[in-house]
Image (cartoon, rainbow, N blue to C red; front, side, top):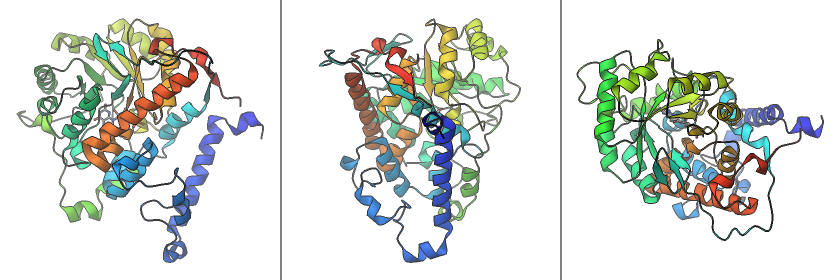
Length: 411
Ligand SMILES: Cc1cc2nc3c(=O)[nH]c(=O)nc-3n(C[C@H](O)[C@H](O)[C@H](O)COP(=O)(O)O)c2cc1C
């Protein structure tokens, strides 16, 4: 195998798969379990705990990066909740492609630039933000932490990060707004019931949301087998957990029918007629759909595959980003999400043309492990990692981050 082949996304994927298979094999082995050499909740030999990349922090202060927060969350959460967060569709190939896409790029850094002042501020749809890091919409957060989205809003507010609240949140959009000061958008799932969509849009407007992002990657539910497996498990029955609360539907007279497989581009005109908010489409991954979206007059795009939770064998969103920004050509903002775990990942997405980026799982790990403080800590870590990356690259503002700072990893 050449060096080029060894570092190709496919080879990276295959190595990851092989490592997983080995861990699965070890876990299933009664002999290994009997010896007790696997650390609880971590599935690694105890001596590995001495290494920071495997450490499970015991306190919030100890957490050094997003991966440590992930392990702290894994330790804190029951299996059902853990799988709700981490699961992807089918064999997780889209989840893996999201991560592998970042590894395919290396940084070309410049030297002898005055980087004593780093400015990560931007304007997004007219809103001033101090960071390009946005909290992606995630439903049912009370299954992760008792205070759910309210804790997330408080964590986001600590540092003024934009939060996109999901349609299917445990708390209502009004309650989320009241919990903090962070700028807020509303994510809308389509419904065959237009009355319900109007009801949700009215609630979002009344709560002072600044934009609505319609999720277009969910014509049906992704096949997340881990989530399905554990959702019917003994934990759910033992804890008597019912279906998660759905705060936005509380006052609606009628069934909350969410998801519409018959949805077409006509929805953009319908939305424009039914809301005064700027409209973004979340889930666009091709140039063809970007052309249609621009023609339909949307105000922004979120390049996303739902964190690999919907279609299997999708491309990494970072791979999709260039063809989207080639079409938008700076006319409308393009956000992207999927697999961002480090400041270098944010830098790479911005260099490939993203206006801003969203994270989903990283802040859920913070929420699961330490509530609102965990959310704020994850955001602070990612912000500081981005700033450090900018200093090393020799860029002092977001506008200065271009694809001249990237090179494809030689295959
Ligand atoms: C547990 C979970 C629930 C989610 N719920 C929603 C949702 O209600 N609406 C939505 O548009 N996207 C939802 N997403 C997708 C996220 O908005 C985002 O696209 C994705 O998490 C980004 O990938 P990342 O987790 O790798 O950062 C969810 C993601 C997760 C992990």
